[in-house]
Image 1 (tube, rainbow, N blue to C red):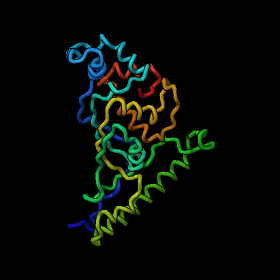
Image 2: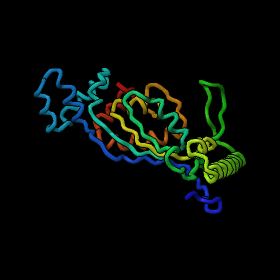
Image 3: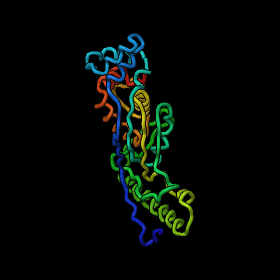
Image 4: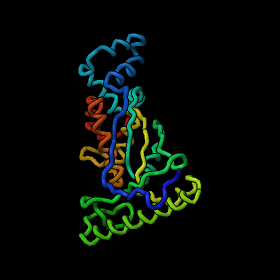
Length: 246
């Protein structure tokens, strides 16, 4: 039985993103046995039981000279909660990634929406390619929060009204905004993650500048924290060589 408007859940608002590492097969040793098969053949399997710290020079060499394929023999799956517009940017990354997202065709979507907090820079100055973001005024922050919240409420009320009238979920969802939260599983390997981080995060050690939208950078930063613990030697080599994916 569908909900009546009186029973409609009150919209809630968030300014954060969440990233959970749900499973992985990823370690620095994965890079080593994959690289050494070219010269050691079946003896490269001995790397599975060796301390990868002894071979961090090889990892750095592979990263420095951009021998990328050894960094693909691992897997990490993340469960991510973020606004829909973040996922639309995320899915520009196709090589080495797999995605499955919550579907508005098959379930009634919950009214959880994004409103930036006071730390989110609101004002864009300059022209494309040379613009910067600066702090907004308190009036702009208050306006942003109020207008976004009012728009979200109106959109969700329209969505529920159509559902209550028997309109299919896949049609009713059309009125919902990209500021609504969704969830997805994203699976990648270290090489594809490095490419993502090189484009979607800013870092003092990066040789090539990047200009990510802050919200997808927030996701990237949380994924990076998980990966750094799984593959510390690979992560160190990535930073030491300018954060350029091999």
